[in-house]
Length: 250
Image 1: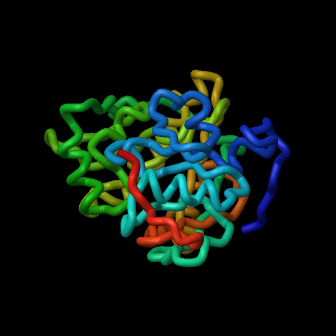
Image 2: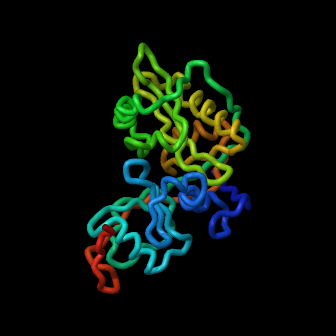
């Protein structure tokens, strides 16, 4: 896979909006979700694990994150490539990739149905069995989710997550193991992409760098690798490097 970095529209700190997509989303179309502490923003914990640090966080930003999360709590640092401060324990780290639309044959799907709050228990069950990535009780509020049913049961789904200005991330792409190999995931990705395009926005997505099956699918559909990234989580220390306690925000 070759990486192509396009200049694209500027994000909050002047870089491309997809370089720090959570920050661009939480200061843009998803600002109504934002929980803020200083320069640190996050989604409600039952909506999404994504949080947004400044492009170059300083000690004060890490202290604000510690206050937002609380001592001993694990915080996701999705897309973060820098170092964590002394005392912060990295608990999870996998390499990731970011893909962007480069000629998708986006189209609606006759079998795809829009999923709503009443479908969330089934969606959570499907995610638990297929592990496409985080999907929480209120993730459905982030955008449109489509599913395909067989004899009434939800067997495949895909939907929208981050929304930086001009872009929408496709996420939670999954298929019941008993129904794989039928092209359901591809159909749903193209159907979700169609809705994104209809709004005048561009689809993008993330996956693990080692998820070769997903990467092969996305490239075959017309996605292009834009950049490599990382998915981390770290545990907030009981005390910060300057000796202050990591007191949670009230």
